[in-house]
Every structure is written in structure tokens, then in C-alpha cells.
Length: 128
Image (tube, rainbow, N blue to C red):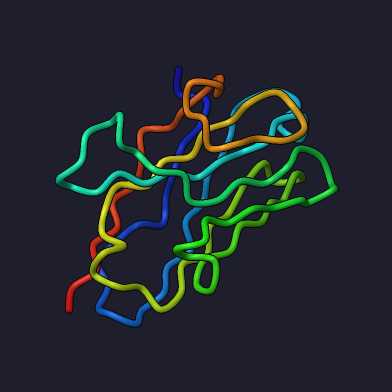
């Protein structure tokens, strides 16, 4: 409960940028891989989609969903216990609530059920 907290969401116009942060109160956060997911307003929690994942530790192995790989990037600062999601050239279809999740393994996938902890999300709204 309350181990992950997202921030940095907001309202932007098409083409704008945001940097989302996922801050952890987990012990040994660097032992957790982290994923970012998003849920569009018209979709259910079950349809929440994976956006990007980053490996545990300092290896920084990342994977970004094909649909956004040219615009989004994930990174982490283990000293600060923060994982970032950089959103560039935002489009209206990127509107939704963005969640981070952590799993105590080296590498994550987009399989939501495998994660140990979730944040409450941060809202991103992109207007045309």
C-alpha cells in the first residue's frame, strides 16, 4: 500500500511533452523492474496497456511499446528511487491515466498480474 506514487501528469496540447515520475518507498527499489501502463478513459482496468518497462539495477534494459517507441522513453535513477517516463510529441490518443508498477525480478513484461505493487496513477490529457 502506497509504495509507489506517480506524478507529473497534466493537460497539454498536441505536440507537447511531459515527464512522469514514479517514486518508490520500497526497500531496495533497485532490485525491482518497473513498468509503466496506461488506461484510456473508455477502457477498463483489464484493458490497461503496457507502455514501457525497465530492468532492475543499473543494466537499464528497456522496452517501449511499438505504438509509442518513437515518442516515449523510460529511465531510472536508483539513488533517488525514481523511474521516469518521458512523453514527447503527445497526441490526443495518448490521453489516459498512467500507472507505474514494480516487480522484484530483473526483467519485467507487460503482464499486469505479475507485478507486486502499483501506484494510483497520474492523469495525462492531450487536447487537439
